[in-house]
Length: 193
Image (cartoon, rainbow, N blue to C red):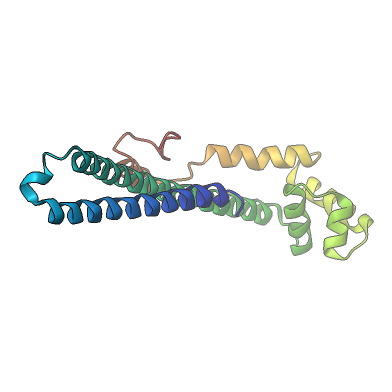
């Protein structure tokens, strides 16, 4: 899915950064341990070099923690977006099927209607279905007549208006989603997360 790639790149980049910083933390801590063994524990805490290494290690540990938290939030956001897309896709399919049934479309007309909704031209639909463009036009005329619309635009408008009027999440899912995102009442997580 095209929308997953930015998340994957960002997640992979953060993962590599976390790995590199974790290596640096281990290096600094090992170096500090070796210096403490060499100079003694008491003398180690007055040595500026060791204090700087300790501060660098603590800073890196803190930044690794922040980056892990960011990565977890990013992955949760990706899951939420994928879930929302699946819900919307399923809702559109269910809505389309309900219309097809109420209009009494034949299976061939349903195929053509689905291709029209996806934005394919008459020639593209004919090629995909292995039929003549005239057959596709005949199916389109039947679809428009049965649905009571005059063209593609009205057909799409009818489906989109109905889809927009129907909530994609039921009340239980809305409450669960709000709880997941800090109880702020959002159906989906805020863009800044």
